[in-house]
Length: 283
Image: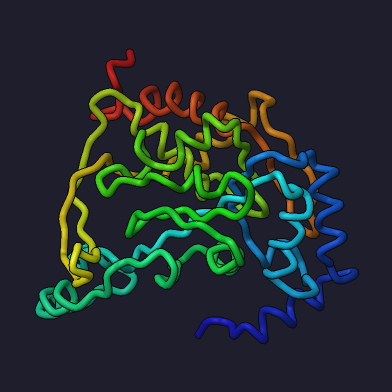
């Protein structure tokens, strides 16, 4: 049996010297180096921050306070349950259910489709007043702030993390990545590095989308394989270069670095360390 939310909250209170607040978290973010007006891609763990007055709403408020009115907050807003049940493992479903699921999976709608496995902070950003969400039915991003509409404008079905996704737009905008109590296994932009490996393997993906008539359609497409299994190792090697600013935000350890820098590092690191189809001609 897993712990209930009440049990987890009680544990946070027991381990907290004092409550965290929107004001204290914003001050920590500024001390870490978050600048007004910048674009920030955030991966987060609410529980890592300690006990926060107002929970996830206060955390999003703190991020927006640190970024100011000219900044932009971006989070992953993935909805992985909209996928082929043949690949489900947590938990799996009987094969005889697969056709029923494919025929009846609700199509993706940016305003209403919930996230899955992203945590409470991203789902709060998704529903924040003025939020804009990219159109991908499985691996969308959501953004709030001055650059939200432009950054989320394009996200093609067969380009989850590649050149026709929000990630290159974030790269061009000079975005930085904030790991807020999260690890490099959550660092979505490293999937952009995967798409830049010559000859990277591909796989088929399926999901439900709304057709031009608004009705559900089950579609299949091919895209580069996404594999975050070695991202912690890649991240440790990147941290060793000195390119990451580390500091406390609430009770969490936060890491801040330029998105373009970690992607470039990943393009170099992945062919040398994965081998096989990922070698990209590296010796």
